[in-house]
Length: 390
Image (cartoon, rainbow, N blue to C red; front, side, top):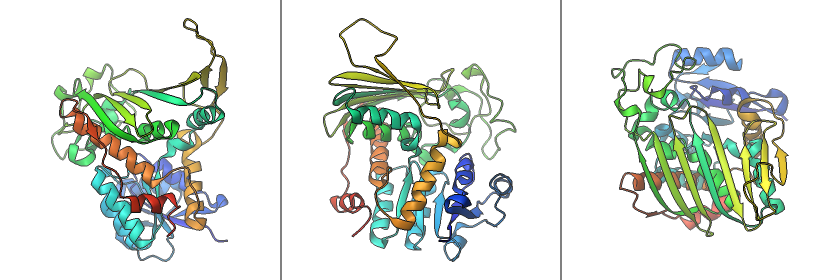
């Protein structure tokens, strides 16, 4: 069987995924790289090892040597590019978040439904060792039935990654409770076994609103990815427009009764995601998310505070970017394009994480008003639940 040949559109900070997509020995490879920026193309050619390039993604759509496309362009372009590719009959891998509004997400789902072209959304955290370990703990019954999930997300370099370019603009992202939190909201749903139905959120632009900015049209300074300033108030050369919050908290009620909370801060000194899941018979918590770190379980008691848990599970070893999840998710995408069938990621789940983050952002900007999540059209939900089979 010949390899699945991929066209990769967009070669910015997620070029590591293009590297993971080029695995000829595993049955899939990158056939062509595409970006409007010649410098980005040149760097990707060197990094991925593929020399065939295009500057216009539309040229990929008529190429017979491209079986599927991987879209990694800025979030606000996802809908237009994905819909065009789906209508051209090219299977689509869409990097998270799938879109920046609920309506855009639903239009992408509708295009996949109407054309019958396969759609896959890259929530790679479902393939991370720490997440799979936590899910296994829950499935085994170590903590009983999950009743509440808490997530704290410390983003040490948030001022550099999210406030020095388009991520800081509302019309490009909606906000960081959608753009940055989409992964975590998806995992909250996955661990809890339900989708958010109601949200309330608060947040503010506390640190980066008053710091020095670049003039519009001025490129980011050289070395910005290697030379991080500290403390956060020393950062400079920020994006000319800053409209998103640098700290936020949201509370969620899920459709199965689980209560969840998510907190995000972009001026913390360290980078860390901390998950806590409390069930009817115990609690789990992750201590790190790298191979060799642990997920701890407390399921005896009641007692005072105990640093030593009843059970400790090591996060499994993995290789490659994002703890091996990038390679795993590209392998799942390639298999899905070829053979169909069930996948760990889900376009409906991706839509629901966008919906939660989007409505939370609206709540945040309306003083914390509780808001309901608009339901997905049952026709689309049923189609994707059947594995995109009519």
